[in-house]
Image (cartoon, rainbow, N blue to C red; front, top):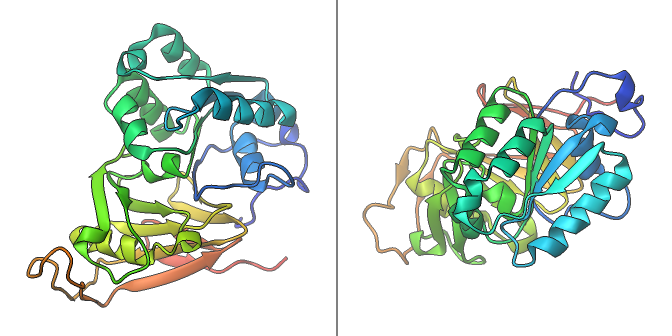
Length: 284
């Protein structure tokens, strides 16, 4: 039950496809095994997949969109379209809306998460994507900036490499695909634990999720989170935090955060979003 489908599994054509949400830490392998992208392709229907790529976070949307388009076409997706959205009015474009109705998977690329939310948040297009994801009709993936926007609260920017403090992180509203989480990407690669802890100090009811590069947290419909890729996913649970000084100090002063629970998960491990329990990888 806990093992992910990989290339060594039978052909996707012989299996039923279960949709999922893939939250990717950025810099996923696009050349060799492409494990994470292969997983998204499979969860979107494999050779029957109709995939929409949203490169709106990128400064070079055509270039990055075409790169992912080529990857998924080479994997054998039935149809792949780049939705080059550069204006909020396009979020009501009948052509884009019709394509989303036909999609089995949507992929949001990296770039600037503020730009991505500014273009998509509260548009009819994004609301329909969210609805279809919640109904389990399509798979959704976001990498880097596309991962940062998944929560209700979003880390919009900040610094790294110092003690946790409120000035270390800039918060904004995300797209609310998975409202319970706050995501930070390129996590250990860019030393961002302090930034994630700083975000959680103001929102301890959320689950902090730091995702390394070439690593993915795959959310199943039943709340199970599967870890895929080469790095780790750090999950910080602040629900039982007994004390923080964040309301009593200056923004640049160090934070105290007592009784946090931290779990580090690697490939094959699982975590249940609702039960807040880890499940170790099962050896084959």
